[in-house]
Structures are given as C-alpha cells and as structure tokens.
Length: 318
Image (cartoon, rainbow, N blue to C red; front, side, top):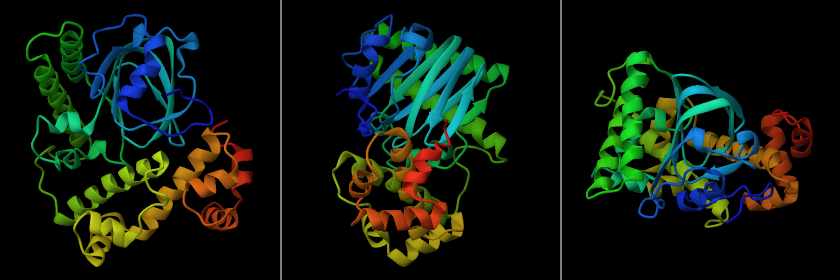
C-alpha cells in the first residue's frame, strides 16, 4: 500500500513498516515483529528533510522518545513540537504526519493492542492507561532520572529486535509493559493521582471503554468496513450496556451526551479529510455516511459556522 495525498485511510502496522523501509538507513531484523511491533532509532531516517511524505492514519499505538534535537508533528488538527527529554504517545485512528529536524536522536516505537494483550490477559488494561485514551495529554517532559530509565527501556527493546534470540519477543513485551506503567505514573503524578491501580468509579471505566470503541468505529468507517458511524444504541449493544446507562456514564464523566461525542468525532474526521486529502466535499460526505452533500454541509455548518469548502480554503494548519 502506498500513502498518497488522496489516501487518508488507516494503515496496519505492517503496512506502515513497509512504507518506512525505504527511508531507514539501518534495517534491523523485523520479519518476526513487523505485524505487531517495531522500533527504530530516529537518527537512522534518511528521507530528504526527514519528513514523512503525506498525512496518514495509523491503526496502532506509537511512541516518540526524544534524546536530542527536535521534531514537529501534526496530530489530528494540532501542531506539536517535541524536543530533548520529551516523550509522545499517539493512538490508533489519529490523522498525523511528522518531520525531524536539528539532527534528531531518539526512538520511534509502534505496537498493536493485540501485541500487548498477548502478555496481559485483561482486555481492559489499556483503558487503565489514561494517556492512551483520546482527548488527553499526549506529551510529557521527563525529569533526568525518568529520561535515563526510559532510555534504558528503549535500548533493551531495540537490542532484542536487532539481535533476536530465544524469548526475545517475550522480553520485548515485558519491556513495553514497563514503559507503559512508568509513563502512566509520570502522567498520574502530573495529574495529582497515584497511577495504575487508582480507584475509579464504574462510570469512568464505561466512558473509557466507549472512547476506545468510538475510535475503533471510526477506523472501521475509514477502512470501508461500515458505511456510517454507529449510533448510541449500536455503541451500547457493542459494549453490552443499556443505552440509557451508557449515556448516564458518559454524561457524568465528560459532561456531554453520547450522541454529542459521536457527532464531534464525526466532525473531527470530516475536518481531517478536508485538510489532509484532495477528496471533494461530496466524496467526503458519502465516505462518512451522509445521505447527501447538502446534509453534510448543514451538519458541518452547525458546528463550525461555515461550509466545508470555506473551512478547507481557510486551512487552519497553514
């Protein structure tokens, strides 16, 4: 699969590794890992200006760990600059691109949800890591000791990938789990809590599960597996919940209704398609499940007070 300016569809981790392969100077042994996990050193990228050619959507988690230099990212509609002793987590379903500069050094890791769950027999474990959920802070500034500890974790994962031996896959999973737990503690300390294991109300877990399901649903939409986003009843059914209870939990945790969050996620997807692809407004409308371009325009104007075409011409990322 080749990424292009007209192809903002989700990439599997294996497809993404194939896209990266021609622009990485030192290729490590990835045959046994590339479907579920990869790790690269940022200084090994050789693409002109070190920029990934076009925005893309990743159907996996990724982590950028900066030791030296800077990099710039566009994530959904937000510009992010990463620099020394910072770490950034990206989630499945986000539209993004990136550019390295100033001789950037560090690590770039990608992994699937399934890869981690083969180690941890708990499908809800990722919902316990708040920083891996949508709409939360993704970037952390690390203290010196935190930076050195995580640097060791990345070095060990890279070594096991480049020099695979017996149990290397298990060792990588263990180091990855250490990374996620340590990052969760860093996130929790910055938010006045105690990290993984902090007691949360049941409504919080329901809300987190809904957010994960929401992102998965829009990934499926962009892959063409479904023709429109789920409504509230369908989300409730997929989570084995009563629609009223789902809405109660979402409202209690976020202050918004389930329907409103679905609509706002649909709006975000539409805005990313308008800015990151060359598709016509009509094509985008039908891709997102609208019955007609005029209905899409009314929906868009309700939230943005302008037409989809006016929004594209304004280009807030320029």
